[in-house]
Amino acid sequence: MQVLLAVDEQQAYSNLALQNALSRYNLPVNDKGLLTEIVYGTVQRLNTLDFRIRPLLKQPVAKLEPWVRNLLRLTVYQLDYLERIPPFAAIHEAVEIAKRRNPRLSGFVNAVLRNLLRGGKPDFPSAGFDPIRHLALVHSHPEWLVKEWFDQYGPEETERICMANNERPSLSLRVNSMRANRDEVIKALAEEGVEAHASIVSPDGIVLNSGTDVAKLKVFQKGMCSVQDESSMLVARCVNPQPGMRILDACAAPGGKTTHLAELAGDQGEVFAADIHEHKIELIRNAAQRLGLQSIRPVTGDIRELLPSLGQFDAILLDAPCSGFGVIRRKPDIKWRKTPDDVKEIRQIQADLIRLVAGSVKPGGILIYSTCTVERKENEEIVRSLLRERDDFEIDPLLSFLPKTVSRKALTPDGWVQMLPHHFGTDGFFICRLRKMK
Image (cartoon, rainbow, N blue to C red; front, side, top):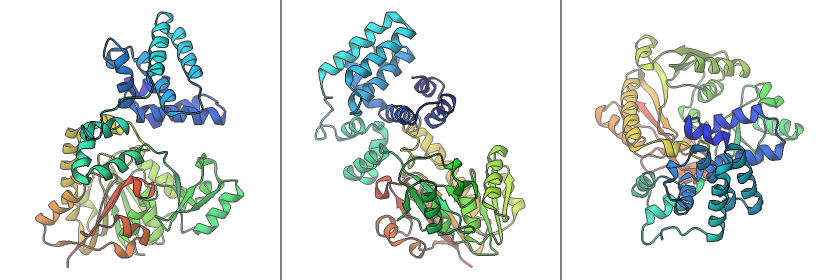
């Protein structure tokens, strides 16, 4: 309840608030897992939980005291979505917490929860009568966002996206090819008691069969791997960095793609990593040091001001700021915090950035535009706007840089990749490779 209060009242990010709680309390492994499940599950299912609670109240859910609201939500999540917790135990625990916070409200909490339990399964709007509201409540997404995807992808694909967003994300590692190959890292993990298998999405990827504290693993401490989502690993591969190239990662922090670029180039050449925040640049320096990479050149500042002094590049990676709707399963609070106005605002930033960095690509050079969202307005429309403005850029086919499993499912006829969360159980990701003509 404390974690959910921080998310609700202080606008804390659920993953950071949870991490903070886990570090403060020395919980057994099972309780850590349960805490994580309840926090993420409650945040994921927020509008559905409120839909369940609302008919039992004389006032809107938002009018309840914050601790009462979040106590009811987390208990209803257990009642509706967790099978191993007996209802009487979940309700008893909620009432005991209420007694400690305000004894006068413990009876109210008890009555609401018991009435909900007696009421049985939820009565959602039918898919035939109101398909968008049906999807929004059954799979717990904002209606405006469901409508966006409904218009872009159609009802079936939208439902698959929503369902995938509520699944537990996998933990994947990227092999540092300068220090090991994939088989060696999988073997080393097994020696540490960690089961893992090769990714079918990325030739550099390893997927762990269960969660673990990666920072404590010897393979991580020795710089043999980094934590990175499988779909994100494809971005540097699509740049296709070669030894001696001068490359810019224009929005680099926390450095996953930067270090991957350096590894793929054999640590020969220069990889400039730009970010506006010095503390994030420090993350990149630390990662480069751990991985033993010498070719990375961190630079602090606004890329819009830095570019004139950096010169021309053989390749530029613009992993643009975006709505983040491809990573909802990792950061479920994103879907509740973002608004249509946020998407409009970020689109303007994206358009300005791609226009800006295009001028610093050498003739014959490469510009990669990528985002971790599934919004076409932030992806293909940004690319199309650049191509309308500049006739010296063309889409460079990605087929030769992708595993066949990915190209068969996510490569579009237009030449870019749009990975959706349900394709491979990874983050949603967009990648387009553009070549500047000589």
